[in-house]
Image (cartoon, rainbow, N blue to C red; front, side, top):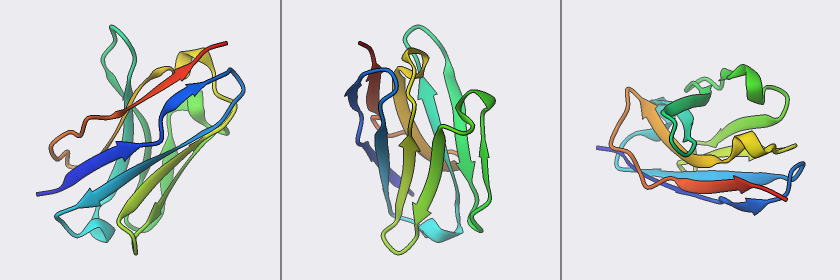
Length: 113
């Protein structure tokens, strides 16, 4: 059973940057495809980015060129570097495995001037 703890969120102005982290424990992290999701107020949870165990990445169109997903298998850590943030990126961000494990609490990202 995988346990996931997200961190690194905060309040940032449009155009700013944040780096989210996800600490994973309880399973073999390096074997798993990892995913970032987000949920904006009054909206459903949506996929943001994926990184496979071999390091292949994929992004939703609205974040391509601005967000970078990465992983550190030695530390069981997943990251999301977010640059050029926009108000529409405001959401609670979650990490998870594929298939999904139990959800963590997420980390709030707010983009506002």
